[in-house]
Image (tube, rainbow, N blue to C red; front, side):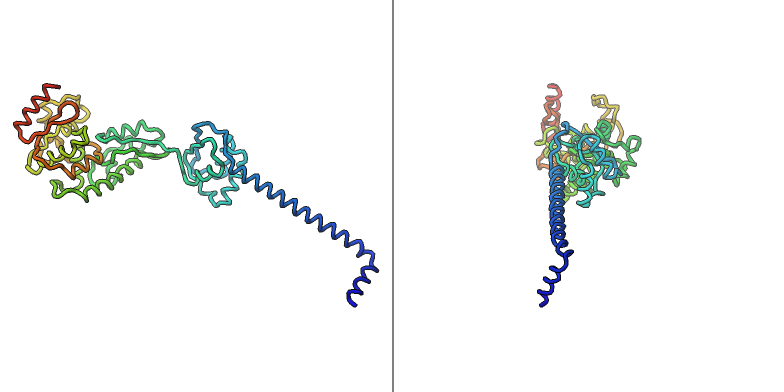
Length: 356
């Protein structure tokens, strides 16, 4: 009865007859609009995704872009657009915000190689993958030579130009007021804005780690009061030896001389004590000179290292080779003649000094 009544009502109401086709048309239109909107959204999404993952091929080799400390993400994106790197900086900003890294861009220099995508570029800046510069601290260098190298190093910020050694030693947390020899010779990498003090701290921490490990594994009883004295010996070995194969023998000679209360009589320590006035000619008068580094006149080790000691020299100082050698003299070719007695040594000195 109800179905019949409804049909009868619709049939008797002309307005209802008009409403049904109109509703169908409206529903159809809505469906078309929804489909079209979805298609447009999908197209926009596809375009954005494709752009953000497309390689940037407009970059010249060696292109470097700097993000200044404190720059907002929008500033970075606009600068990239000004440089012709990004075509749509707004998409770059949106990507960063969607990823939750809008405030994670790190300052510094970035190398932009051809083929990098906006997504990769964003990841690079979030990681702080800055352009790296290198500096090599050479075995046997003095602290002054290290500072001179800093002065000529690219993009390194110099803070220690007018700082005395005691202040530098204090900044490094050293017990001794002289930082000589307290760095590990190696190649170090840094980014623009790194300070010379930061590099010194890195090289000093590296030395502390290596020296601590070597000291823990030292061979038997040695005539050193502490690891610092072993490092001082290592620096002398470094300056005495050009051949790695001889470092153990040279260490053995010096260790035995200490054990027998003989003076080290090492020329490099005398030269270090003379300082910048040394003209390359070591005279007998220099060997009689009174200073704490003249191991011809003092007993035991000098008060500090005399140069940067490499790993081989550090290990040699703590693991000297056993023999009866007490003397050595340079042959003039970088190698040495080792002797057990003073008589043999004097003959070798006469022989090799005449051939120079």
